Length: 465
View 1 (cartoon, rainbow, N blue to C red):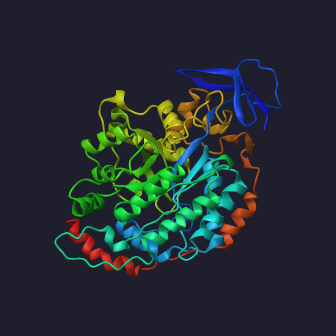
View 2: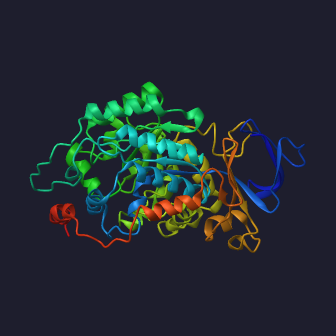
View 3: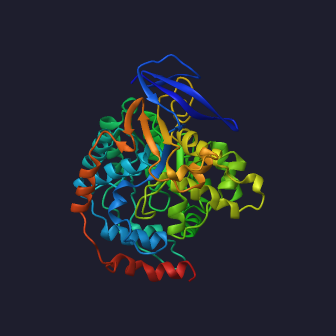
């Protein structure tokens, strides 16, 4: 875990420098030109070194539905997903491997997996994902996705009276599972962390949120959730609480500097101020937001208000990819049409900072990773600037963020351990992974979802179609 990257390009302020970077015992020990060689020599010539990005929100098991989900808004899309999602443990394992590999090869060294749990096999599901992420070597933040209300409870009632089936597992039993997972698998020093992660206000009771707050405080866990992804959820919050979802989460104490919130599209100015005051983080998932027609999150408003923002791919059933560079590009330039004042637009360097340090802040570990600073753990990515998609030689970060880079990750390290070399993952056989993914799937024809049929009429009524 001791090595020296020699003659590598790094970004400083508005310029670049060619330096050596020493890593000792998995941490950045020195950054300067012409350092003495420590450990293994790594040739950094014609390469760009950046801190690893964080894929700050995804659902790994959705890999099995990518390319086949209907073009629906979230509420109907979820009903279809519930009908068709396979949840056996072998597929959990393979999709976690695939998510890790795609994240690594698009610049990410950490992943936040809002992991869908197999009913009756919840701890086994978590153990399976832990095993996959450990085998690859990526830094994993596993956020078991939990709820205690049935799917139909996530749609506003409007003027009708709705009766919802009880959820199959009690709130207390769900919290017991999460506490057991923390005790068994929460090992941050070994690269695996457990987060408390109620899916969101639309399918979770206050009792579940309160239980998660308690677990978070007792075990020093970060918190995660979806928040106001759709207009329907904004309406639902007013029905449930008589106030906005953000105001309610603040009242019950869920918001904090350890809280990251995915999507955050339908917020007002007061909500934005609350996120800034509580130092909560917004995870921007632009591709799924577009794919599901959820809307465009007011990211420039968040940044101007001092809210921390980072990027996520979201699950591959609502994005159909785990290409983090693609999410960063779209999540940056998308907002050039939301504010005519170009001085507020997201520059490539700002996007890189959001994807690395912003993600680390959202997980409350900005003191450990997220930037090229002495003493931080060596979660690093080396990009090949001779790759055709990063040529001609103009601005390396501009090319990386605004271009269409392919196969540009030359090397990647997590905690000083090299897990990508020459654009190949060292720790697993990716050819075998491809074969297994192919073997465990088949070309599918779209089926009509009974769950969609049951809720579609009501959904269209309450949404005034």
